[in-house]
Length: 64
Image (cartoon, rainbow, N blue to C red; front, side, top):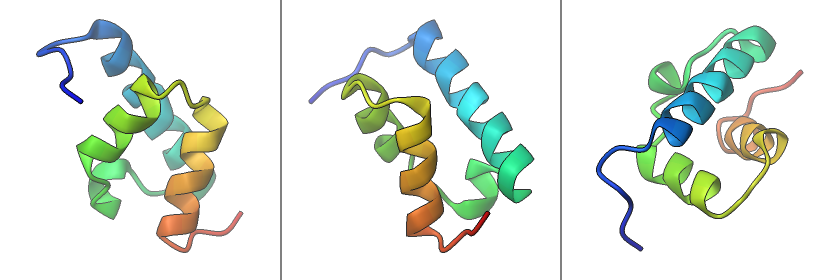
């Protein structure tokens, strides 16, 4: 699937996800090495913020 070159909705969604990840686990997407393509798939796939956060936490072994 191709994605738009720039999408302000995605940019805001990703920043919100990163802020929630920082609040809950003290790590950013960049620090964890989360692939941007995963974020794009979640966003354009219509996954909720909570689902994306859970996916990232599970993939990186983060606990609450």
